[in-house]
Image (tube, rainbow, N blue to C red; front, side, top):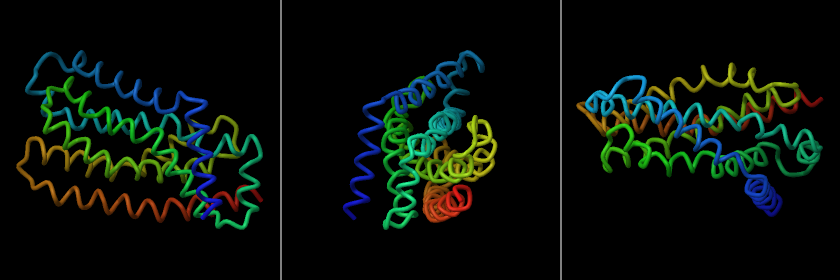
Length: 222
């Protein structure tokens, strides 16, 4: 547990010291949200209807920006080899790194969502509902992206390959995240059903993502 805690704190400190990851994601998120009214026109009713989908799509694309650095930095400086050779189970070490990555890059998107919802003509209640679905769903995006990061870690310019691998896997999360947001904002479907499925997808991606990424690293680093 001490090794996992040290790895978690190390990744947080490195992310905060280097900077840019969470800030760039939020800036990209803001860019997508700000540009959308120019694309669809000044119809406030239409913006209110599509607002949850735009917020979710912006958060999904923003989360992809830093996924290629999730494991690549450790591979470049050799610390990934030390992690794999340590006595700490690789699955737990990867989980700690993924959690630190989500806190730095995913959580700011959740916090920013209610504010950015104002650009989509969403009131405070609707923005809070979208933020709740992002809080439940963005960890799934991180753990799904973990698989692509592990597969592309040893490749040069693997960012494009990572996006190609990860985007199809995130479609179910996007579908039920938007469905839950729409249910809370415009109805008429109940909020609980898609939100429960979204939480289940996050739990499944946590388990599958960790073990799949560990297996990919063991296979690719041999």
